[in-house]
Image 1 (cartoon, helix red, strand yellow):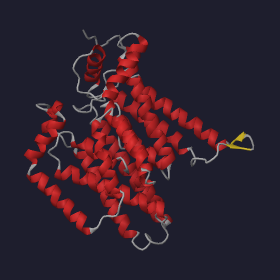
Image 2 (cartoon, helix red, strand yellow):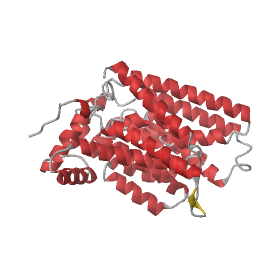
Image 3 (cartoon, helix red, strand yellow):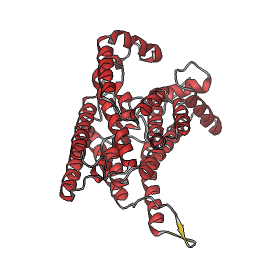
Image 4 (tube, one colour):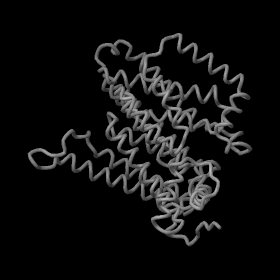
Length: 382
């Protein structure tokens, strides 16, 4: 497929799955009543399975798509034959298990396993934890989260687990939360960062904490040479790479800035309702998600010099998938709520089109789409 056809293909995936998501209902507490399955629950399961099959199949069948597809195939080969690799133990064990079961270096199956696991966890999180699966899924597609899973498969599996773990942060079930994040760290050790950050973001911030945070961020920016040395000590694989000079994705920074502005407006608009109409659960969610997005903005400004800092910010900004639908649902003025919902949809569509038009660039490389079903080309390693 050439670039134009690939963009049409991606648009079709987004439109079809978003329409399917719009037909789902709220999660049902019980799947059976008097021995018969509830129709809505059965319909939801069918639609969710359809969405999962479409998204995971498009990801699993790709070939050479993503900025590091070939690099991952090479790394998987090294992990399988016992060579030196910098990847975490979870990835290495999974590769040896998959290759050992099929009897050869089937990197297509390895990518498929990551696709199935990542998409499943994302969908499970959105369906069970969002106030509106329809809106959250729309954001998941149009903000590019799904298509970015074609890149850095270890990281996006860890990101999906981090998103799912937010339910335990809200429930103050720290044992399950830490267990999930440690498991995610076996695939991408950067996930460990969210343990202290999610914990800190779940509490109300006093003014002195905010001032201290600004001072700390400014100090790190001033002493960025030292911070960079510490970062490269933790991630030596980034030394002398293109990532050192091109770490910020400005489109993502703009998106985070717009969401933070929306959050600040919403908190001002709802200032008389926070202690009244809003439930304790809603207030905890607003606290967690709002703080995480403020931290994402801080990371993209004070720590913009770090390699691939956008990935760090994504651990925080992925909460937008829950926060935006929650804020929209809590606006009591029906006319205003509809206008904001339309405005959010319009902004997301524009963002998605910009994303697709840039998807051929270095660092993304999602265009043109190719599948190993229609090519005899393969990576051969010796």
